Amino acid sequence: MDKLAFFRQLLAALEGQQPGVAALVVKAEAGLPGVAPGNRFLWTPEGHYGSLGSANLEAAVAERAREVLAGRRPRLDTIELDEGSVTLFLEPVLPEPEVIVLGGGHVGQQVAAVAKLAGYLVTVIDDRPDFANQALFPTADRIICNNFTAALQDIKITAATFIVIVTRGHRHDYDCLRAVIDSPAAYIGMIGSRRRVQGVKERLLAEGVREAALERIHAPIGLDIGAETPAEIAVSILAEIIRVYRRGA
Amino acid sequence: MDRELVQGAVRLMEQGEPCALATIIQVKGSAPREAGTQMLVTAGGQTLGTIGGGCAEAAVRQRALLVLQKGEPEIYHLDLTADTAADEGMVCGGIMDVFIEPLGG
Image 1 (cartoon, each protein chain N blue to C red):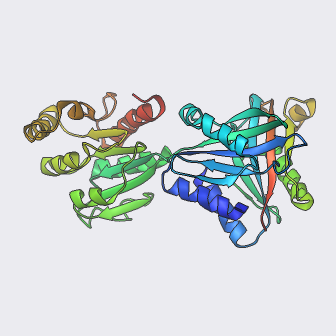
Image 2: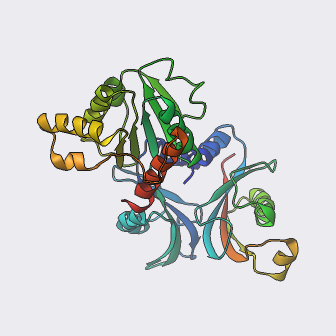
Image 3: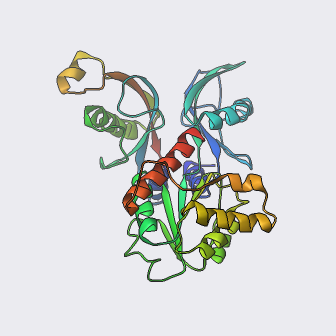
């Protein structure tokens, strides 16, 4: 596999939001034919690409992969082989965190802007063309104009997805929540008064949704900083998302 | 791993444009960017991405052009703690190892 093919594969993993570990030989002792600085290898749970020039080295990467992914940071490892030692740069390939904004109203617009500022991929969904458009969301990566349930069926929700439900009415909130409640999303937050949130939750419970599933919903949404304006609310929502992303809680 | 940078590398290789990829593989002390940060340098001296700007980045860019001529990857060792670094106004004062490799083209 030449370098171009390897980098295409790496790009596909990044774009497909697929986790993996990229290994790069940065130093190799003489006496290891085929093992040269610049050799690259990509480990993913589904398959392996590229070559380090030694099956033992690739096995060493596979052995360390879960630890490197969990550590979230790149590291240098020196591997001792019978023929000599090799230094590998091991780098986690992590899915890019994405914020899905459901509802393109005043709060949704600010959430999309602040999420982009914080470096997240941003997708906006609304069923009204007057709200799901680029003029209102100039920095969003993706704008989908469709009804919420259909749109949510079409997009991929992963453990790197953060869902913000800020639609214009409780009927839409309910549709959105029902569509994502069993997804692997890292975060589900829903705006609304305690009463409105409670109403939606009770309806889902009556339909047989497990109580544990409802407990993961962040509602009222956002950190309690006394936010009042749409922009302030957006900051409090992103603060909560950043905490979940960086600290896992 | 930065998607835009990998995209840039693929694009340059597809166009047959020689370029070098610089990756910070180790940092000791206080350096402007962490391990894993990457920058692409084309044969024309254009860069994509940043490894922290300033003199350190300029030095890596120069070195990358040499690596492109030589055609062999290397580890470039930058000592930002030296007196000269302070004289040059590099404020961070750490040690940085950068792996520079030629890509396709």
